[in-house]
Image 1 (cartoon, rainbow, N blue to C red):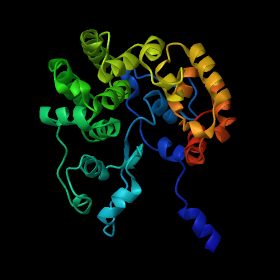
Image 2 (image 1 turned 30 degrees about the vertical axis):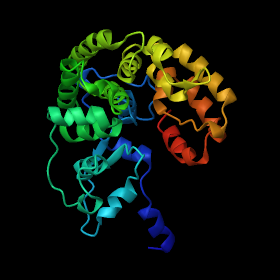
Image 3 (image 1 turned 135 degrees about the vertical axis):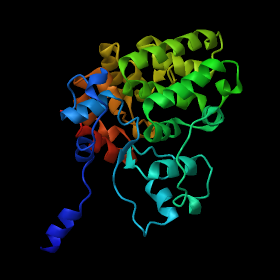
Image 4 (image 1 turned 90 degrees about the vertical axis):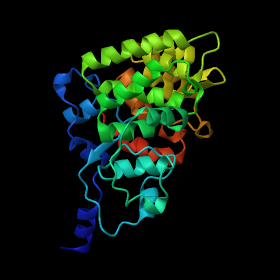
Length: 304
């Protein structure tokens, strides 16, 4: 084998190949799909279930030579890994939650558990990645049962104003895509009741997040995040009930976009708006910061 061929064989698989090799949630659950936009049936299912807002797991083995520091190097703080080896899930969860020192992360063999105290900490100090790591370890339905159940039973507790409330509630919006339709409907009903209690004249971050997650375009227009009167691009991902509005808003935003705006590309915006946005984003890469363009190129391969 030549040196060139050795280099080729050692090349990491593409995101498209990795996703195509991971079995998506069961079709019989009545899960949403991506309106025929996915490059393959498996990718279509993953996009319909919220990718990249998820932690998917592989059976990649843990090597004996890996040092604890490699966990932080592999998944730098502030990043959200959408695909990772199963063994790393509980370790990264505890590392990001500050439960263990980096040097002890890889030696911590304990499985994750989700009691009320853990849910309270998640809502006060966690984020969407913490939620999706728990989902990867325990399953979507048990996580929804625990988190939505806690929120519904403690609607006057401090978690409503916690730093974790907004990202965790938004993260729940994606977890809801990965359970059977009957389970989803039950949890959406509970969240609607909670929204009615929490959404006041001065809504909390938790209430605004519920509005966006539950109410499509109307919720995004009321409670979406933006700057100087314009919604951030990623907010349009939640307005799939009105694709025409998503296309119009995204095109208007892209027309004025500059790298200094630090916008990110979320494939779920394409899922919400449909095929016309595939080329719109492909033609606008230079308007995003260089640091985001590599992921944009990888995400673009997921669409037909």
